[in-house]
Length: 98
Image (cartoon, rainbow, N blue to C red; front, side, top):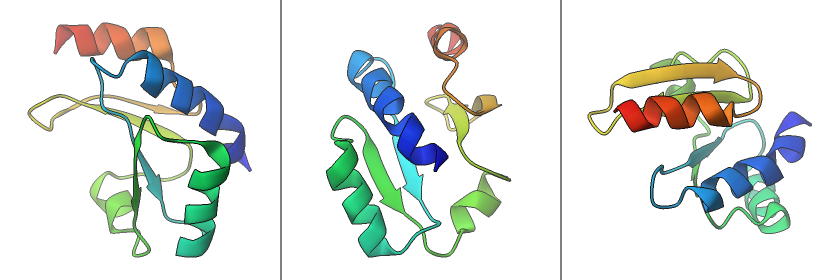
């Protein structure tokens, strides 16, 4: 699955930018036990992982597929949105403007 492939890159991005950006991952598509196993296997200690079995977060953020990257400013306003791998240069450029 895509999340398993992307997890190491997301973790590295979060680790590299701990002081600049807070990275939050959402688990929704598996069972909660599978989500816990995923976190333990993938070592996502540099980012916050949230679980939403209701998919309400997908509705609230208008997520239509995964992986989706959404950059929010400190005021909660969306600064950018991408589908797929984190476009590191774009994310950092927008974050620097916020």
